Length: 333
Image 1 (cartoon, helix red, strand yellow):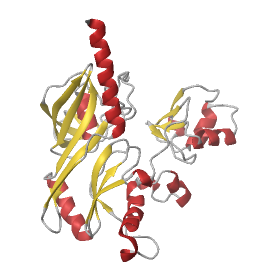
Image 2 (cartoon, rainbow, N blue to C red):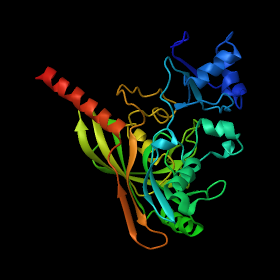
Image 3 (cartoon, rainbow, N blue to C red):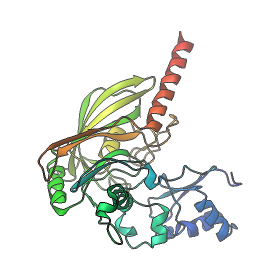
Image 4 (spheres, rainbow, N blue to C red):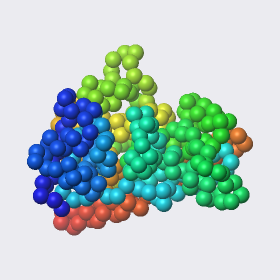
């Protein structure tokens, strides 16, 4: 706990490309550099909903910086990465929430120290594989890299496949390009949704700096999501989402635009130029998990399909929603 309470700051045009530490010095006048650094390193600062541990992170105009009243949850470590399948060509892992799939372009030149603050999945995975394979395939120096062929959002957990060879990379990328893979997600949303297929054309900027759907002819990329309710839990619903296409943030955008932003959503929780939709769910994080992944092995041609249950933190949240729903039923009866 600190003396400032919860505060939210919006980046001004003149603060674009300023470090988060420098901006905090402006927003918290009179506070020393060392105090600002302790707040960041103590996990009290979020940038656009994600924990920020790097005082030198550069800000963008659309960033929202939040000063938390209590330390945020520690970022995941390599120990939280579970390898589901491994051979000499591919590796399938269960990505923990809070870990980025690979480093963004603007961070590629970051120092080793800054990279260690929040390592990406493609950075830690080669070392995990090297430990699993042991002395038989021990490499001198840095182990061979893995190659990302698709991605999961930082706050989304679940199944993701990486290629280990160029042959596997070409084969997998072709399948994702043609949308022949199986990708099933589970999400928890407010309200209730009937089974439906959502189709729209997504653009990088809908008009306020966020991705979204457009109705302008000839613009955007086709995005198709098949949604089916799995369980209605009081005022919330556990839904299954199957991707026919795989656009960036597709499920999050489609559910939000349908009026049911994923519980824990901090980016697509507001309509265009509108006020944020209040989230009273108490969700531990973005309630979205990739629970099924299927594809053809890019080298052997064997059909591959992997399924995992809803992760523990989201399952605990489902239990809590069920408990609340039972209490409401008792009060009404």
